[in-house]
View (cartoon, rainbow, N blue to C red):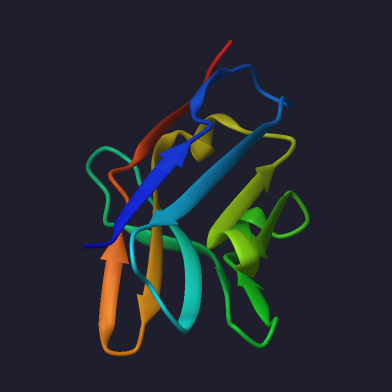
Length: 115
């Protein structure tokens, strides 16, 4: 059984920073993509940042230059460093990890950007 455990969300003022972490626990092999999604109230879930096992990364236009995705393959962990946060970044953030034909999702962590 694989479980994704997220941490690092919270309340931050505009312009502030947060770092999200997502660790894959359990028996998991050959991790492929490790991504971060978010879902704001009344909106569809959207891809924020993605990373491949080969090291390629991609970002939503709205977060380019402010967010950085990174991964520690030895720890089966993916991170999202979020800088210069804006109110529109407020959402529940989910990590997603793929392994072979399987896709795993984290439980979500709330990020609220407000003064």
